[in-house]
Length: 187
Image 1 (cartoon, rainbow, N blue to C red):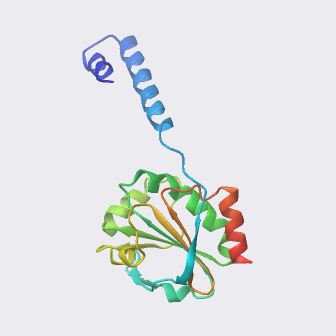
Image 2 (cartoon, rainbow, N blue to C red):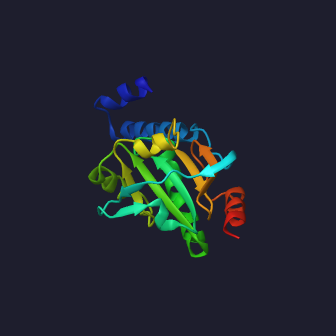
Image 3 (tube, helix red, strand yellow):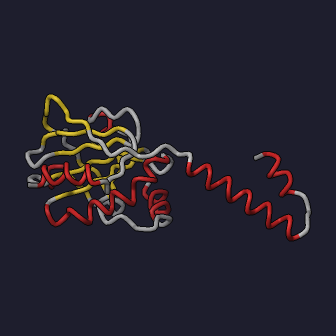
């Protein structure tokens, strides 16, 4: 890569510039292809226990409490804009929400440590702007209550308000296995 940057940094004819751009683009594509895949598994929690309550503000400073969604299945996703798997899973999370929201799925994306302006700018870079609530945990207190050790981490809360599944690391939320799991919780 260093040699390519050096080659491309010198003044060269247009053909050489074009070749350099193609090579650099190819390396960027290769680097993206080398990212580890996202999983599609959730781990059942045993024992099942009540989800810790919380009240957090969204981008419009509106408060959301977990208790506001009693009787619904809630996917709580802890994330940050600087986290590559978090960024990769966001479009699939939106697709999942759109598919199941009429059946009672709620998605709450809880951002860690970042402010609303920064997150709003990031959301503007996405192909699809999330329609689910994006909440802010600036002190990371809620993630501590949930025992989050790394990002992204997601939890499924059943209709009775219990933590029933956890996923550590990025997920393909539009994968059929995750959709089947959600269907069992929503039925």
